[in-house]
Length: 472
Image (cartoon, rainbow, N blue to C red; front, side, top):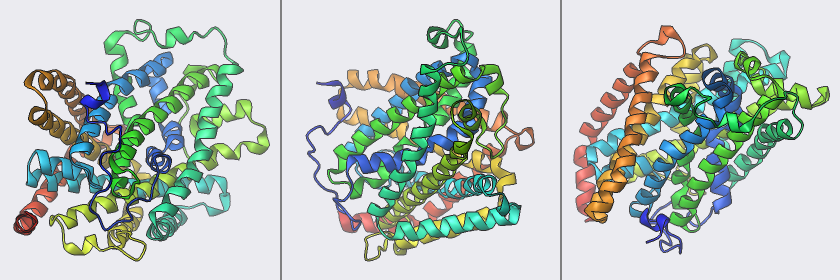
């Protein structure tokens, strides 16, 4: 058995279509890959996170990203490939946990993933507004930022309701700009270095990084940077060759993000000393992207460093809105939420789910403006960690059903270790927050998410059981 076949890779496209009322048979691998990579938001992630990674790992930042890519993120991707083959659905985390763990757990985790998407949309809106204000100084002020964030949410709600093809095309256009700048600046650093006496071999030396203990915190941060590749799954019911398209897309998104961040992590060190990069505080001006851009770009083009973060934020906003809407749609179809959330418009878009997420996003933009950005970080971190842990637990349960005990035990070991890494991330999110005043905040949010999901599960359990009985 080939390696990918062991994980259920649908190489021949055996699964041709999935029962759905969405616009099936529409999206190609390229379109889904670009859309999902937009959710990862490379320009904004590098603007907000690369300096922190340099401060944690120094010259070994590329090594931290490499380790995070192979473990636990690639392990998670392989687990999701198998789960996608066995339970294809636009609400991946919900369906996986409902099918292979427990119906009630499915409701809780579907709700958890939806809240992650619901938090990303307003978070990216306030970030996009902040950078737009720097790009256009006349738009300054917190109230204006809230207005801009609201306009962004409403505009891209309309775009999303116009059809998934338009959504994918817009995401692709935005992504082209940010990849060209982020990766391009990294390549310029490598081919035209301004800092000398650097060795790429040292950047990948575990000894130079201070051993496992020294590189560990950077790896955990690298996991956060590579997250969201799984949003490809949310488009599976609209893909041309559903399972194969999404499986390819997940691997392409994760690997593309890894390559983009690696080029930046290496190349930027050749442009500016790593100690200087580590001290750059991102404040809406592009952070390390802008600093490196000043080295290689003429002054007339420096605005690009800010513009790509705006487009990155918008792409993240749009795809998170779509991902959350499709999770609500599928949960509604299965009877875990009111049936109205499964309604689609003439363009086969779950319009009410999309509008609902937009309304929640607008409320949060005004209730939690840019000054409360760490609250968004806590919500997104804890909800994504819960979702990934549940997906890996579903994978472990599944392999013992469809693989021999020996093979299942072998595959279980890295999956359990990946769960342990994610649990540690959940612990550090609450115990060592970015802002000390937010101590334990992520834990409180996580508890509230689980309790609210459990209440929804209890209130909808009879309807879900009745629907499953009718379907049987």
